[in-house]
Length: 142
Image 1: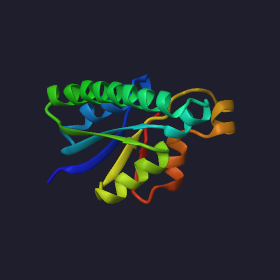
Image 2 (image 1 turned 180 degrees about the horizontal axis):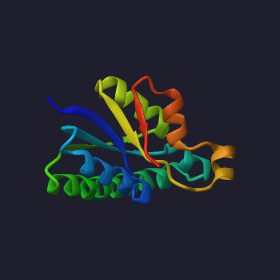
Image 3 (image 1 turned 90 degrees about the vertical axis):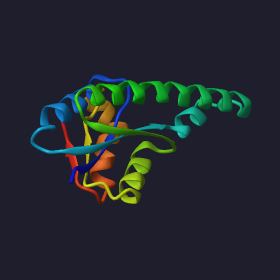
Image 4 (image 1 turned 180 degrees about the vertical axis):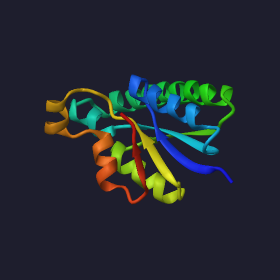
């Protein structure tokens, strides 16, 4: 029976690193993968967009996310790994933890973006928050 894995992705080197690790491990650990991408509403609201602008930007963001996760899903599919995709909105770390709990995943594989130690110290990173907040086991890939 395959292990259920949740993998938060974006269009970064870190996400590609996580996917390459999964591909490398596919023969040792059979996996069923859910790729998730979360559109952060709070970041958009922080910039002071009007409601009409916010709706257009959210729609464009979701459309972009759909293309990104589908690109990643195809990479996994070509490697012989079953994967499905999920697009959500909200606080990324919170949503990732909620989806992991709701779908009873066996673990989360996440690779932090390397924005720098100062940025992570001041604002925190999604990966750090997932490690701290999720009840599911988290595999942090550097």
